[in-house]
Length: 279
Image (cartoon, rainbow, N blue to C red; front, side, top):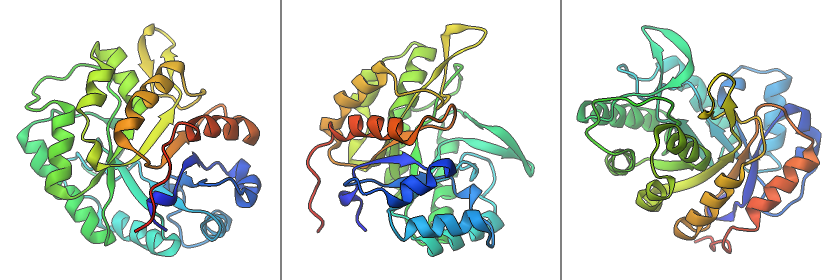
């Protein structure tokens, strides 16, 4: 299936699997973290394959560690390739971050200085991943919580060059843009106006929370609340530039009812332009 046929989707939670399987909303699709399904069998894997037979799927990884100083783990890539071949997702994506160090996994998606060395390394890691999977992937802009020194590029310039060199697409997470702008004191609208929209394959929308200690001085990309008003405003601002790309509602904590998620999905769907015709 072509991504031009996708509308607004939802991050799949297993408690909503029966409703997801039977859903008939136009343009609906689902996204999962592949790490939860990279197994040889079992009920979780069977459930995903059943859903893939009914609805378009996207695989959104959290552990390839593309910004690490080593190549992606070959065994991990082999398991991911097997899952891709099995469920035939319309999109595969990862984060612009690192999470491994000398064979150990960190529980976070960590930042890095956007310098020329990092650009070359991450380009190579993306190309290795794409060669292993036999398809292009998309890379998500990160959330930021502290200032880092040593940048040679703005983030939008870095992503532009990364997409050009590697051939990857870009996943534009608008909640990440809002959280980062608030935390670092930068301009969210200026970021979106500079974003290379020609490379965008998908948009994410999510909720955030205030840090329990610092309060509104530090926002956390928590995915445990409805999409905030500021994020909806940014989405409406950018969608005219991006066009009819798939948009996803992410919700990973304080999971609401299926009906509430579908209402939030409908809010995103109403702002999407008319679908592009499949070539």
